Image (cartoon, rainbow over all chains, first blue to last red):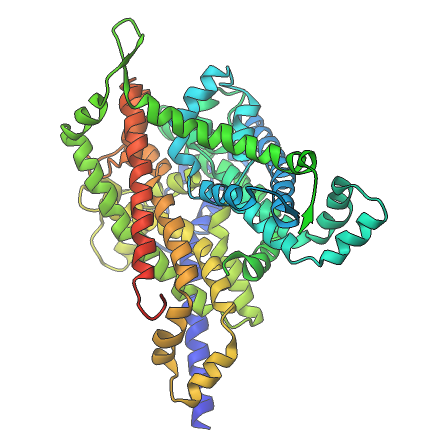
Amino acid sequence: MHHKAVEKGREALRYLLLTVIALALLAPLLWMAMTSLRPQEEIFRFATTLSVQSFIPTRLTFSNYAKLLSGDFPRAIANSIFVTASTVTLGVIINALAGFAFAVFRFRGSNLLFGAVVASFMMPFEAIILPLYILARWLNWTNTYQALILPDVANGFVIFLFRQCFLGMPRELFEAARVDGAGWLCIFFRIAMPLSGPTIAAASLLIFVHQWDSFFWPLVVAGTSEYMVIPVAIGRFFSMEGNDWGAIFSAGTVATLIAAVPFLYLQKFYVQTMMSSAIK
Amino acid sequence: MFRASWATVAAFLSLALTCLFVFRVVPVAIAVVGSFYGESLTGEPVFKGLGNFLDLFADQEFRDGVVRTLVFNILVNPIQIGIAFFLAILVLNPTKAAKFFRVALFLPMCISLALASVLWSILLDPSLGLVNGLLSALGADRQLFFRSEGQALWSLILLATWKSVGYWMIFLLAGLVAIPSDIYEAASLDGATGWRAFTKITLPLMKRPLLFVLVADTTANFLFFAPVYLITGGGPNNSTNFLMFQAYRSSFVLVDHGRSLAISTIILLMIGAVAALEFRLFRADPKQG
C-alpha cells in the first residue's frame, strides 16, 4: 500500500513539473497571439505588471492583421512557403536516392563516401554562409530563389536516416522486383519510397525546420522585398524606424500558425523515426 | 547488398553528392583560401599569407570574441542538455499526457529563431517586458536583461534554451526508449533502483545519444547569430560580441572579406577541435573502451 502511494505521489509531481515547464515554454507564444489582437495603443498597457489582463485583450481588433495585408508581408509568406516546400520536396528525393544507394548497392568507395557524407553533417551550414555568399555572387545568384533553396537541399543527416530506413527492408523485396525485370529507379519509387512513410515525414520535418528557421542566409543573399522570407520580414519590422509591434506580433502569429500545421502533423513520425533508427 | 552498374550508382548518388560538394566543400575551400588574401586599394586580391590571422590575434576585439564564444558555449551546452535530459526522463513513460507534453515541449522549434529573438527582446525589455511585469508582481526588482553588460549573455542563454530544449529532448528520449527494460528489472533485483540505477545503468547506456547531442548542440551554439544581430548587436560593451557576429560584421560592415573568411576558418577549426575533445571525453571511460 505504502509503495502505491509513493508511486502516485511521484506521478503527480511529474505532471506538476511538466505542466509548469510547458506553461513557461508556451506562455510567450500565447502572449504574442493575444497581443496581436490588441489595438496599437493598448499593446503594452498590461505588460508592466503581470495579471490576467496581460494575456487577455480587453478590446479585440484585427487591425494589425488588416495592416499586414497591405504591405510586403503577404509576399514574404508566399516566398517562405514556396522556398520551404521546394526545399523539402527536393531534399526528400535527393537524400533518399543517396541513402538508397548507400543501403542497397555494393560499390567501391562506398564506406569512404558515406563517411564523408556523415562528416558533412558535422559541417554546419551557418559556418560557411560568408564563403557561400561569395560563391553565390560568382554564380550571379544573389536575389534568386535557387540561392535560397539549393544550398539547404542535401543533408548528411537525412541521407543517414534514409540509409538506416532502407537497410531495414528485406532484401527479398528488391530481389523479387529485379526478377520481374524492374529497374532500380522503378524499385526506388514504387517499392522503397512508399514503405518509408515515417522516415519521409521525419526527413521533411528536419529540412522544414531548418529552412523555415533560416535567417542569416536569406538576409545576406536575398534581402530585397521581392525575395524576402518571413524571418527577414519580421527582422525588418523590428529594426525599421521604431519597432512596429502590432505588425511584429500579428506577423509572428501568422508565421507560427502556418508552421504549426505541418509541424503537428509530422512530429509523431519524427519521434518514431528518431527512436527506431537515429542513434544506435 | 546488390551489385549495380556504375551508371546506376551514379544516378542515385550524383544529385546529393554534387549539392554537398558545391554547397559544403567549395565554400570551405573558399574560406580557407580566401583567409590568406586581402584586397589592395584598387580592389584586387592580394596574397597576405598569414597576415589576416596575425592581424586577428593582435586584435583585442577578436581575442575577447574567442573568450566570449567559449564562455557562452561552456555555459549554454550543459544547461540545455541537462534540462533536455531531465525533460526526456519526465516524458519517457508513454502515457497519453506524456505524449501531449512531448509535443508541447517540442513546439517552440517551429518558431524561427529570428521571431524568437524579437519576441524575447520585448519579453525581457526593461520597461515594457512581461518578465519584468512578473518580477514586479512578485515584488522583485526590475532587471535590464539584454541591456545590461552582466545579464545580456544569460538572457541569450535563456532564449537559446527556450528555443531548443524540446528539440534535444527528442534525441535523448529516443536514446532512453532504446534501453531495454529488462536491464532495469535485473538491476532492481540487485537493489539498484532510483538514483543508483540512473548513474550505473542509464548514464553509461546514454553515452552515445549524449555525445551526439553534445556535439550537435555545441556546433549550433558556436554559430549562434540571429539573436545577437537582432537584439544586442554584440553589446552592451561587447559582452555578446561572439565570433559569428564578428565574421558577419567584418564582411558586411567593415567590408574586409579576408578578415571575415579568416574568422570563418577559425570558427570551423574551433568546432572541429571542440568536437574532437568531446569525442575523447566520452571515450575516456575505461570500462566502455
